[in-house]
Image 1: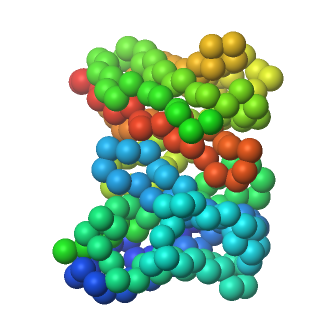
Image 2: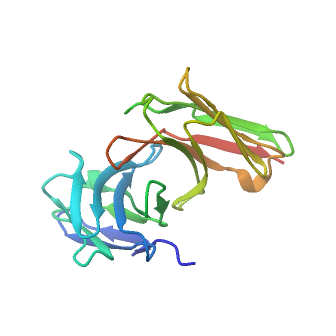
Amino acid sequence: DTGVSQDPRHKITKRGQNVTFRCDPISEHNRLYWYRQTLGQGPEFLTYFQNEAQLEKSRLLSDRFSAERPKGSFSTLEIQRTEQGDSAMYLCASSRERTQYFGPGTRLLVL
Amino acid sequence: GEDVEQSLFLSVREGDSSVINCTYTDSSSTYLYWYKQEPGAGLQLLTYIFSNMDMKQDQRLTVLLNKKDKHLSLRIADTQTGDSAIYFCAEPTTGNQFYFGTGTSLTVIP
């Protein structure tokens, strides 16, 4: 049973650079979610896909953030012109119905 | 349902029971969830309870739900050092996202 995978697991970048993260959901799951988690906090919702359609976006998702799920399978999250405040753990989850299963996360550090 | 509250820290001795508490706000939630997060890792689904249940037991885990008070608890029997982690309760919204509490950091003392 393959769980949710994310790549890379860690990313260090300089302020102003663009970064892209990938999430591969559990294969039969049509729903995919991105969350952001900062130190000492619970995950905060960023966006939700059902198949290839992006159906919900949080107001946390500024114009510098874009997410895609072009074929309804894997998803990418891109952050343009990174800022130090973007440093966080980015978590991906997938589900068939309500129950969400999380990947290991990508930890981003912006210097 | 944006305010899911948990106490921040809990310490117990190995072998004792741990009780982690959570209050939520959205009475229409159909399921409520408990997740475990170990350092540097993602969230692991522990258990969930359907809103028409008062209690669910799963091996060492017991979930209690008080819908009147909007209170959810997770009891871990015979707590082990491997149970040391952060525990999050999560409440689905009427949309598709989950609201998470700030997490309770459980420390198990050998």
